Length: 104
Length: 303
Image 1 (cartoon, rainbow over the protein chains, first blue to last red):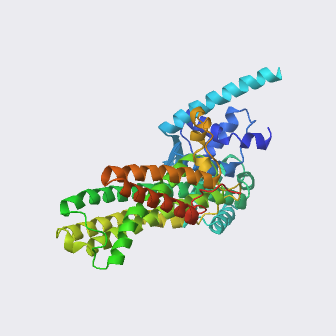
Image 2: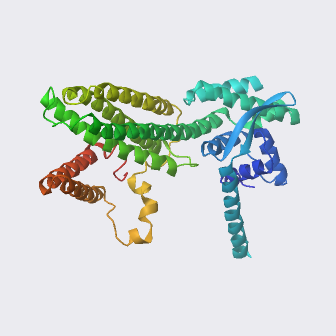
Image 3: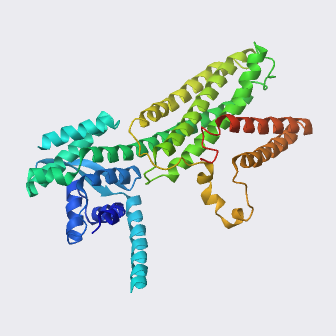
């Protein structure tokens, strides 16, 4: 999958991943890769600026947690994040459906 | 290898103006990430997959520039709201302290007139600048705004905070200037409220100065008041009115509105003479402020 195409949708991919389960940065990269059957291989360092953007916009919150003896910063959706995710997912689905019709 | 990568990341973050506390957080997250990634593969692969430290640091700094500037602007508006409450409260209390003094009856008549004019006009500058900062901060939420646009947002908030602080200083000095004509409790009450208001907006000043440190993304033009008003200008009923989008014509329309409000207020108070005077002074002050602060506040359409 072309990097430029994926880059434009990093925010939505991260919101979707966090909506499935709160996770830390590496866990999110892995989850997106796994869910997309390896098609969406995010540039790992680029995930953090995107997470800070989502946090700055109040869509996710984060806190340090110790998991299996390791300290990690875990991200979870806020209420605003949940509604933003649902709205963006709806928009994307409508766009995707229209695109498929147009390309058929 | 992870240690070297983290050292490089920290150096790049520092070079991009990221504060120590944020650098510690980013590097701690990067360390946890690299350790997890190493456990899944090799150390060299983990460092390579994480990406170039300079690229990551610049992207982090750009995001932090936006979030810290927005936060500072919102803090400025919150502080200005408290200043507004104190200002309105003191104006209401002044009626209990005695009759409103003649503006030329102060200990130093010229100073008394200047302070009274300042107390009347500076809050309007603070209100407009603070309001613009609030709308601007709301408008760019979730966006990666560029350095030029963030500079406009910071200037709006700084002008609002400076005008709010100047209002409170003028109000405090004015209380002493007219103290002989008002109740004894008036001056100490005013000074206490002014000092509390200054303390309320001081953190915003500090946050605004600090928000300029992370290097923002060097992209795009600075937005202006027409970007702020775009949702309103797009409404069918407003669009049909064909409001002017030329800055000075827009200022003229605003000045006419302010003149009308000043005139009506003056007529309701003392009569047509006062109405003409107050309307003209308010309209002239608006046009003067537009000329002096229009560019700083992003009121004029950016080139």
